Amino acid sequence: MLARGLRAFAVAVLGLCLAAHAQDVRPDDVGRSLTLPAPSDHWVWLDEPLFRHSKLFDGDTGEVLGMVDSLGSLTGRHPLVSRERGETYVMETFYARGNRGERRDFITIYDSRTLKVIGEVEIPPRTADVGHEIALGAVLDGARFFVVFNQEPANSVSVVDLESRQFVGEITTAGCACVYPVGPRAFGMLCGDGTVLRVELDENGRQQRLTSSDKFFDVVADPLTEKGVRDGQRWMFASFEGYLHTIDFAADRPTPVAPWSLFTAEQRVDSWRIGGGLQHLALHRPSGRLFSVVLQGEPGSHKDAGSQIWVYDIKTRERVQTIDPPPMLSVFLRRLAGFEAGGAVDWLLSTLIPSPGVNGVVVTPDDAPLLFVRHRETGAAGVLDALDGTLVRYLEETGLGGALMVVP
Image (cartoon, rainbow, N blue to C red; front, side, top):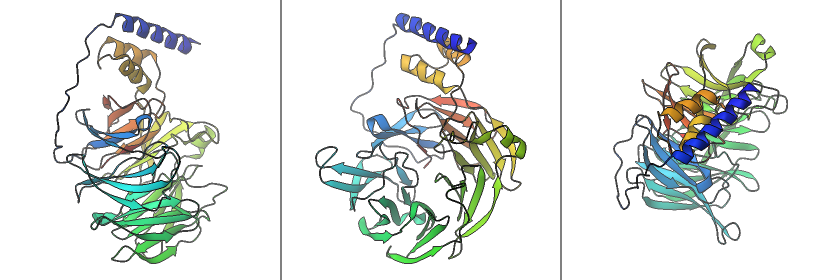
């Protein structure tokens, strides 16, 4: 009751501040055309599904650096980046009459420095579209081939040669979904029979070999989420009951590693489980630290925003740190009202309004890593020091919703 009263008071104060808010809005500079500097490890792409585009942010300054469109899908698809080629790719779907009529699918190619469209490749009009867009497309190592998961009506993968900018062909992968790069000409897939599939391409991008693992998880009793994280030629996936499964794709045949629990018996009694629903895992390879969004809830609550971020040492398989998410609902309201960060209104809202939690985390790959966190309903995003968990800043202009984040 007290918390509800405080929230009502905060909203009332916000309304009074809005009424008194008379500062001029600084006009945007129109007509300027800029070129981005060399890419930084601390850049991040954030989607804004309401307007079907993604924005590039600098985590060190909080500034918006650029934007690309992502048209045609249910929520817009996030960019995928190749530093080797200096290119950014977006999978797009178009219909002849807006939301109906003849469908055509493309890989749209942007120059990563100017963010201008420099090419496109038409692919079969079967690109999967499931809302979150995670693991539906991937640039394979070396950036020669781009692979796209299809699901209309059967499962398959389209292969694009990025050198010639041509569609190579389609590989049938019945019962297996999503694409996870494991080499210059290989990728893994999760399968509905409790196995994983390794797909190997020949030098021209055509199917060379398909190999399956033994069954290692129960798709009914405890399925895996598709939001995996990569560790070289290994991929890690959490099950809905909180067991971390690792699959080694280094050999011709994928090899599952014995899973381990993200929660102790006592924590399970206290109803701790994986949460967030979207990018709930992030791995910082140099330190071997795994970040996991967690919550206390009943079975089926895994899509709710997580109340904490637990950090594990993947070698010892022990939790080494707990991070409390910043109060991003308050920054969303302050930003919506048009107030500058760091003022009295910012302090008031962040003090009175509790954190709604986070739906996703991504971490930069460098030795001074940043941890980006985001809340789905508001689109608000925060930047944390990944080593000590302290808040560095919030990202402004993140839109009115969205959850996906991509570190290039």
